[in-house]
Length: 109
Image (cartoon, rainbow, N blue to C red; front, side, top):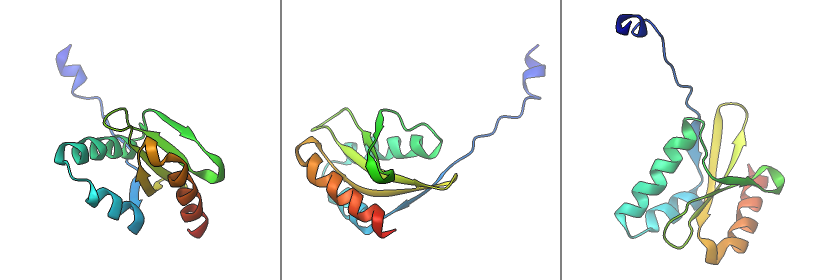
């Protein structure tokens, strides 16, 4: 029975993740290493097709919610079937401004 399981071919389709300079600057500006690790783990999950808690906004922008710290948010836009562009990030306190920024960045792509 166990030998039969080895014959099963498992594969995982990974999305390509690209980042804007705006996102890179925000991410590199985070001070806590553990925070960066947790955000990177969610980005890795997104790449494997599991965005977790998220909501679609207007203009093709999606808000990925991270339930720790001050309520971090990562804004991204899917492009085609295999590409996701991380636009910017922020937290609950800057959410309204971050959404406006993400929408503007998505229009520039």
